[in-house]
Length: 233
Image (cartoon, rainbow, N blue to C red):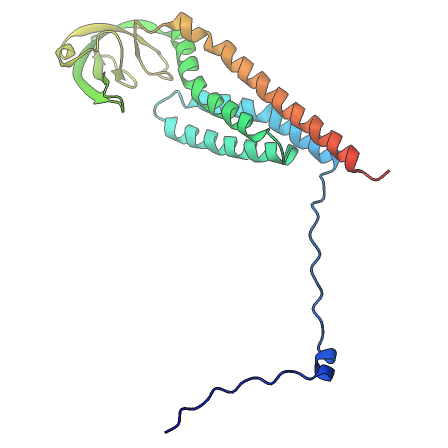
C-alpha cells in the first residue's frame, strides 16, 4: 500500500492575502516616571520608618522566647524597605549600599541592646552550673554554653549563659556569678561581658540610621532632578 501523503496548505492568493487583517505592531512600552509628590512621600516613609522598625523589632528579638518571630518580621521589613528604596530610585548605585546598611541594622541591635539592658538593670546573681555544652563553628573553634539555676532557688528566666564561669565540662556543679535581668528581657551573661565596649554600639546604630536617611534623601533628590529634566518644556 502506498503511504498517504500529508496535505500541503495552498498559499493564499494575492487578493486573499490583501483582505487578511493585519495585526498591529506593538509599540515599545515607555516607563512613566513617578510624580515628584510620589517620590517625596515614598522617600519620607522609607527614610524614617525603616531604621525605626528594624531597630525596634531587633530590640524585641533580644528576648530568646520571641527572637525568631521578631527576626523574621525585621527581615520582611528590610525587604519591603529595599523595595521602597528602588521605588525612590529605580536605577543607579543605590541598592547595594541600602542592602549593606540594612543588614548592619539587623545584626547590631541585639548585641548592643542586650548590653544596654544588662548595664542598666543587670544584677550580679550567684548561680549553679547544672550542665555544660560545647559547639564548634565553621573554623573549628569550640565554644561553651552552660545551663544554670539560681543558688537561692528562685526562678530564672532563660537559664543558660556563656562567658566567665562556663569554660568546659569541668564547670558543671560549680557556683559562679552572672549578670541577670530581673524582668527576663535579656538573657543572663557572664561578668566578663565588656559592657563599656558594647555601649558604643548605640552610637553606631545612630550613625547607621543617619546614613540610611542620607542615602534615601540623595536617591530622592537624584530622581527628582531626573524627572525635572525629562519633563517637557
